[in-house]
Structures are given as structure tokens and as C-alpha cells.
Length: 494
Image (cartoon, rainbow, N blue to C red):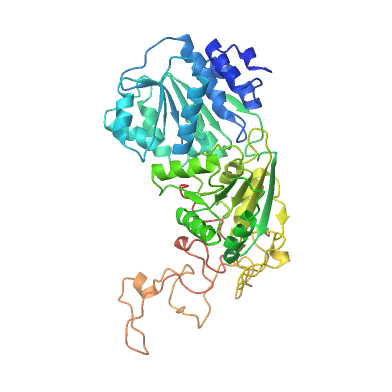
């Protein structure tokens, strides 16, 4: 299939594609559209920016055109689930563009806005409903929506939809759907455990993978700069002062971190806006609109934007924080170099993020080239660069013989768990090396003895001695952890 006309799509759909200037399908479209038009279940994997939305939107519009059937009241014929509001909006806009010459209705529902307007739009029924899982369940619970008439289910960014953050909502939604339906799953990454879960929702699916799973966009020029945490903000400001940067998307790991970066850029005289889950929907829409029209050339975001922003002309992606989920790196840098354009992705990596970098390189099966500081940049005082020999992660994610922060380890033999040392607050009658603050007599149910020198009870210790493993609540910054940071639980993304 070398042209869209080769697929046998309905004439109104071909007319819309012709008006949009689309002639040749991308590889994912060429392989996914024929089986989707035939009604087969499908799991499609392709790089970001390769036209996955059209790969399911075009065959869906074609199938709807074959049957002139009205949608059920307070129901829909096609249900498309998206993990983010921004991505849901973009999918709905694509359906409107491709189906402009068809009489079918589509609407989008998500949280953060008044639910009453969405209920009124759904009352007569819609042909295509694009939704985020949370708001969809709200509408079902209010009896404003029924899913009994769904003929086609689409999961966009299926790996995230099947992850812990959405799987419980998805299981509940699937139970409300008819057993006989077509299911289409699309994503840029599909970890093995998620792929196994996807098989539970697909019936004899066609597998389409036009590139190796988790392959990064070919036209993205990637690099990593090893920089202490205290110098990241200054380095970001130095890079963004380059007038050649048209639009830059900066990713942080947390919502509060995004706000801090925006405040730091504002102090440096660089206008920026933040977009994350704590922002109201109007705030998110204004920030994204300003980024699209060029009035704001720097957008700071959490991973909510890694799968929900399709903006032309994003020349740079900066990972202020490396993601603790390696698949997120693929989606992040995929925001640039879209539709055949070129782009640049720069990642900042401190001592504690080396394990994340190692996971990313293992997933993408390629090393990220290391770059030095850009010309003219001088780290602020107190934030010195790490020695050159520490810049690449060792076999355990850090340089041999050093703790995650780059300090020499003390009091440990290779491969031995951390042990408290005499004279550093550890009592001989304490059990274990986890620093949980419990003494042996407390574990046996006896009352704790007081400090023999003062006669006062000893305060409960939090966190343990210097060489104990960091607790899960400290962000992995404890010293001497034998496993670095890779053991941390990976919670739901922002």
C-alpha cells in the first residue's frame, strides 16, 4: 500500500485526507489500516510521531460509513480511551478532521471541567466518544452514559492504560462493554508484562510492530550531561538563552519540581509555563495554547505531557530529571522530531540518576552520547562537576567503590549489606540493618529502657545510621545503599 487510495477507504474519508495533503501512509498506517478495516483486533507498536492516531481513526470512520446506524441514547458506538486530557483532545480533533465530510458525531470527556455540559452532549448519543477513564466512570455512575452499544474499543498509549495507574478503572470499564466488539491497542512501547496483560482484552489479534519496541525516533539527536543537582537550574537557563531554540519542552519528575523550574527560569528572565496534574484544566489549556502559538517558547511539564502533546516545531526536549520509568524517556524525546523533522534531546543526570540512565540504555539498546558543559557555562559555586571517571554508570549503576552521591563508601566490604558501626548511634541490641528504629526489647514487647546516662527515654530514631539503606520516602538520597536507586517502587506517573 503506497497511497491512501489503495486501502479502499470511503470516499468522504479520502476527500478529507486529500484536503489535508495526506497522500502516502506511514509504515504503521500501511500495516494497521487493512486488518482494522476488516474488523480484526489489533495491537500496534510504532515510534511516537508516526501517525498512530490516523492508523485507527481512518478504519473506524470507514466502518461507521458502512452501517448507517444511530448511536444509542446516552451511549456511543466507538469508545477511545486516553491517559491524559491533552491527548484526548487531540484524538477528538483528528476524528473531526478526518470525518469532516461524514455525518457522525464525536465528543470528548475528561475531568477538570463541568460535568453537566458533558452529560448534555451525551444525552442523545454520540458515534465516537473519546474519554479519560476517571471521567468516563463518573458519567457511568451518574447514569449519564451506558456502554452497552460500544462496537469498537481503542486504547491509545495502551502500555500506560494497562499500567497500575489505570488498570483497575480499565477492568471495570471492560466489564460494561459487549463481549463481541473490535479492540485496537496502540502504543510506542509495550513492556513484556504489559503485553501479557493486553492479550486478556484482545481476541486473536494482529500484531503490528513497524520498529523494535521502545525504539527512539531516528531523527532525534540525543545527549546526556552529567551535572550535580545544584547546577541543573543554572545549566537549563544557560541552554535556553540560545535564541536558536524555537520551542523547548522541559520534563521534570514531579509536579512541584516543574513549578520550581518555572520560578527559576522566571528569575533568569526566561518566560516559561508549567503543565501538570495540579493545574486546572483552563490553566493547562492556556499554557498549551501559548506554547503552540509561540507566545511562550518554553513549556515545563511532568510525564502528563510525554503522551499528550503534539506540537509542531518543538526543536528541543530537555530532561531536567531523568524518568524513573525508562519507557517514559522514549515518549518524552518523541515530542520532538515529529512527522519527519529533526530534533535535539538533552538529558541532565546527577549522581543518583545513573541507574535510571542505565535502564534507559538497556531498554533502547543504545548508549546515550555523553556531552560536556556547553561553552561559556560555569557551574555555580558549591556545585562542582563529578570527576570524569564517574560519568558512566558502573555495573551496579555507579562508579565502583562510591555511593550514589559520588562519595567514597566506608565500612563496607564488596557485596555485603550495610552494617551499623560502633559509635554511630547503633546499639548492640538493635536487630537488623534497615534502620527501622526498633530495639530488640521493643520487638519482644518489653518497655524500652531509658538512656543510662540521663535517665530519660531515648528518642525513637528515624532512618538509622549513615551506612544504612535509604528509606523509600527519602527519594533514594541515602548514602551507601548497595542497590543505588533502581529498587525504588515505580508509582503511577503524573
